[in-house]
Image (cartoon, rainbow, N blue to C red):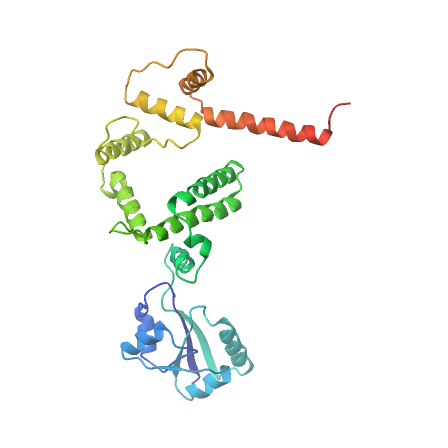
Length: 319
């Protein structure tokens, strides 16, 4: 009867020792070998499973296994693919010597690579990391957050989903970087990326009772109304304009303020006069009344003008 060699692969992003029942049964049924020490090896030993470190090749492992009917190779964080390939080729040359089996003792849950992003950012901002990032503050980074958000918006406008994936990564970088900087805040004001995620999760659950609390709703309009109602209950505000982001582009800001005024049923007339500012504000109000987005319309007109400029540059000046 040939030996069964199990290549046990585990997720480096989960706590060591967090294995499936099948994996635990397997490591307790035969000798366990590994190429190097690891947290997983330490966890197995703590549970009474001996782990032998072998700095060897495929033949060395076969010699160490001897006549054991079952042996486990505890793969490293990156799967030990070169060694597994070498072992597979060695066994293919001599059928019947042993059977190689791949077993996943644990695997990455969805979102596990976010842990990598947090770990990399921690390395960059720790002593010996990146001096530029260590010198930043929330204020100095603020323009980059806007810039990366606009670049993601542009990718959406172009319907370039591959670029959107990359640009969203740049937005995520800003979020992780701000959270890591916040860990250094003094006087008990520090917070972490886990606090950011926890606040987000609590908000999503609280504002979606039709999903998490079984609250009946009839349509999207009722869902939106519930969201706004819950939001008002959460935040004690003195004005319908509280919470409006004042740093957004002027046309978008005007449209948002007019929307809040309409929703709050506040009767304030638009400014009169022929000055440019009041005239533009009245145009925004007219656009909203017609169900049109003034920011998007101006953007589209500007982009079309930009294309005309590029075309004129190619043709050259008229004789």
